[in-house]
Image (cartoon, rainbow, N blue to C red; front, side, top):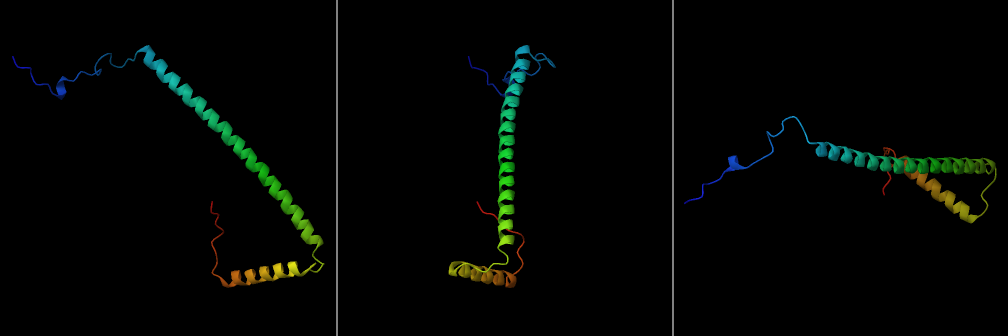
Length: 113
């Protein structure tokens, strides 16, 4: 008594059973999966909005500090350098400016993290 050979055609599947209809538990499982995804996305959204708010706060701090420095620069415009350290710094700045004028034009600035 030989056992008949089985092939791919003998594999039982659920295809053809209850065509076009799904069991209620399948529908509820899909609904619960969607609800979990929604909760996860809501949490991501909350964290993203919090990050954006922190960035906006930092932008306003930067703008305030920039305005303060510009006011200080304007008030110090007529005054000469206070000491040799500032003179060395100003010479260094002039040298860097001269080098940047002779260097090929840069395409903006790049930030490396």
